[in-house]
Image (cartoon, rainbow, N blue to C red; front, top):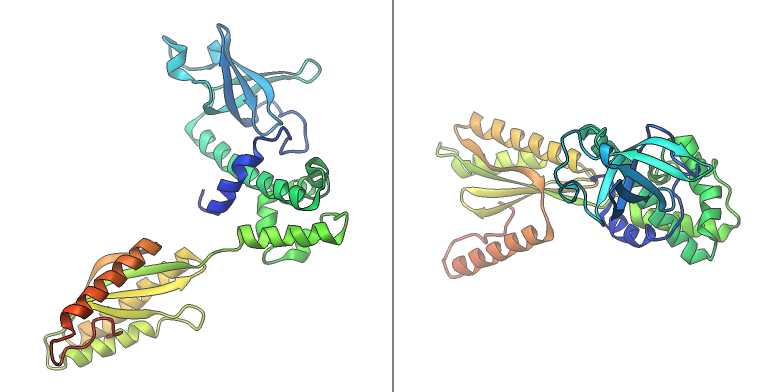
Length: 318
């Protein structure tokens, strides 16, 4: 899930092993979508643990496994696998929970997985807070997590909002002491604060008219002007006529849109002077490996051109 940082996914793995429930209610309601893990398979169906409800036991009856005729139960469901199910019946007195896999639609799976991943991320944060403060995790849920679920629909959404509007979120919770509050804010800041993303596009710029190189330089300047103080745009020559245009933004979509506008500005100016701009690679987020590959390429080109009299360095902006 895009809006959950990778380190939250990684840290949440351990958090889900604890037998505590994610939500205030002890049992799910009829028609709720739940994430379960298959624990065993019997003649009557499959026994599962409800991952969001402290791993309490539920059962998927054989008739609720598939809409089609069941030839082999092992081809439909396997021990250890996570499945999305819908709740059919809940007997709170006896603790029986009947579930269905066959009544789950494809869109239900996406909805449940999104909710589960967010809840798992919340569990990871709450577990970490419990470890740092020595407080019981269920007590932390009672004072912090569950009130935020009630107010904001999901505690994860409230955690993210806390980065920009902490007063709005913190007014809904009660901290036992300032130490818990301090650690809570530190964890949220470290885990959920957006990380800068490097965006890059590759373009070929040519102009064989009278103005030639000057037109290309001026056109690239027009592209750079589209950058902002917080998100400047940098253009580097790889090897004529190929250039790379980059920017670093907190919002990936915004960064891509910015480079698209910059490319259009370059194209408009260069074409007005009789030149042409061809997009070789559309704006996209690049990794550290991509950056390293580009650096190696520029270094190789610089070495090749080092002894060629009159050549510009290949890593100059243009």
